[in-house]
Image (tube, rainbow, N blue to C red):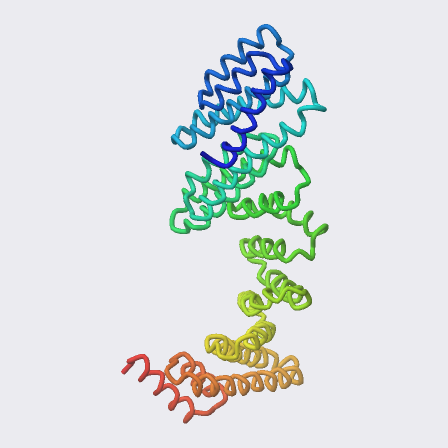
Length: 404
């Protein structure tokens, strides 16, 4: 027997005995209390129903009928009869509300406590199942929590959040993932009818719409949310997903940098661990936008967070090569129409390549087994006219990769 059951049992016995002595409670309700103590919940419900035929306006009768249904629901959960548990919680809620309506002064606190117990216990079970990724069982408990207290929508929000998570875990099953997202969207809309201005729910809806490729609908929600909550890093990171779908890489990179700035200036030290990833994502998106200079800068900031990350150095090394190539190409195109600009571009391109050589030397010294480092270094040296350096580093690259 649970602690709640033990406590209620003691209370029920005392109430039954006291009522028999002072005659302030109907005989039907008193009998029902004893039946509840004996775990005979259906008998308790039936006895009270008989009494209500004679005294239909007895709030205490409805309250204890709610208690009987609550106990019946808890027993049904233990027996794995979730349909009976759901019906019992629904009946308990209806009886509790009737008691409260009849005598709000005497019943409001008692009803609130009873509903809180039913709701909290089932919601907690659902959260535990969700945490362990037992999704079907978790949804069952969340739906029981909703049946216990349909006025509270946290259970529906939890189901929606769980389905969003499930979809994320199915990258190789797009049809099932889409179905889960559509279910999540319907649940979010159900909650938003009652809470149309709920910030996180609207953000979740925009996120789901993005994953469903309904980018225009997501954009409208995000634009509104950004006007109100433009400094919320989690919102900004959600919007990045939309920008990625829309191939707005430069704007996405800007949001990653903005989040990094927010984390740098906050007082939560745990956010510092996220800076490397944020700068790396900014660098990647700048690279996708072919903004190589800003990509180099962003990856440089990422490297400052972890000076031993060779892959970040290799990324910067390649970017210096790409940037140098781009500038030299622009210089060649401008040589006739604007010689001065062509000369400036060439100087800038050569400087980028020389910087790439410096980073390449660091990579090959720190990670002599990294073939990419030698490959990018060889090509950078070739653009600088260093044939011997090119041949030497290409030979090492071929040796490491097994190319004859």
